[in-house]
Image (cartoon, rainbow, N blue to C red):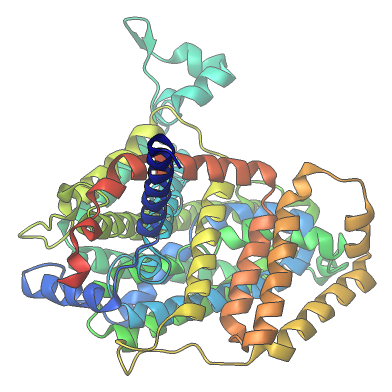
Length: 564
């Protein structure tokens, strides 16, 4: 071998070594001992304040769950599934319960404020943690844009019922007004040839909620508790009035479009449950996370499920499911029975409910950024704690701007599905994390997901579901023998993962609940369509670009922090 050949060979070996070293760095894990000690040190240095108890956490959960889903998307789900959506709410609640149990164990085992981001850093490595942190933007910050716009619609409708009318160009986004044209576009004033069109109510509610989140967790807690009381009382009032106008004939047929029709509403129904995971972002401010975090998560899920099922039955009992394909189904059913005055109460309830969602998500997003900043993946400014308010002040303000600026010119009607797929991805990783969660260095009194050996039960459940769908709906075989479409790619991915997890569960005696949580969340993702998967991966690609430009180089794991 000549000197030149030896030099080339050496260069190749060095290149391979550097490549492997880089790949290893991408999956470097942050030790659990370090994560927990950082949380304790932050408390001693005047960081976040431990002030939340189980009832406060449950209130945060209810505040974040009961929002745009129950007041809007339930109508479309009822139109497709009929009265059977009440069953779909129960099925979705069970699916969410799998994830909720996993979140409860994670939050009590790793009681810091980073939620799924921190869990992923400890269990899967840095690159997965970054992906999850970037992904959670879809649920919290980006999702809040849609909630703010919906809040504005209900608020203006409520004012209209009181004969107070805001000019349309001050409660509409620029792109929608330009697309529709007509009176809104023509009546808008101009400055230098630029139309003045902006959604003032949406901007104001974002500023107000951001201010509350900035002022402190106690103020946010008190506001959330008050909003939960109001929204629950109003929903109970609506139910008590509605039951007297139920016509049981409207419940027949119970599933007019079969199982497949019922499942069409699964995205909308799941969107109604989004939010319980946001409780885990406040773990660092919980007095006793091992005791209270599981209670808060599960209580909120149970209470909301009971309300959802009753409301679904009332809705489909008061009028035919064929009439419910509208954006305000709760208001519509009372108009159908000549109780239009209740529509104003529904609008007021929606205003309170969506404000609660905004508050919890505006609290959650800054705390995720704060933890990413502590790890060096974001600039240090994001982890600064306000000396008086004890909140991540800068990150909270940035979140406010991130939500409010797009409201000026964007109509994000498609953000619902994108928000759902981002949330489901985080749920999937948390459920998978329970399967690899180490048992050492964890709090001895932490909540644990009940262990049920899935070796035999999982294959039995899968076979029962397949045979049931084939027997009652003749849909499984038809789906696979019909012509190939690109839209089937997400379903194919789900089938592959299903087979892999079934084999692993059989061979390794995996715990049933986290496996069911992982598979059910992935199934819901597959139901959201290829288009949303493409948009999701495009969003992830942008996040990875930011990570490699900044986070990978600035990560504190580069400086051997784990050893210290």
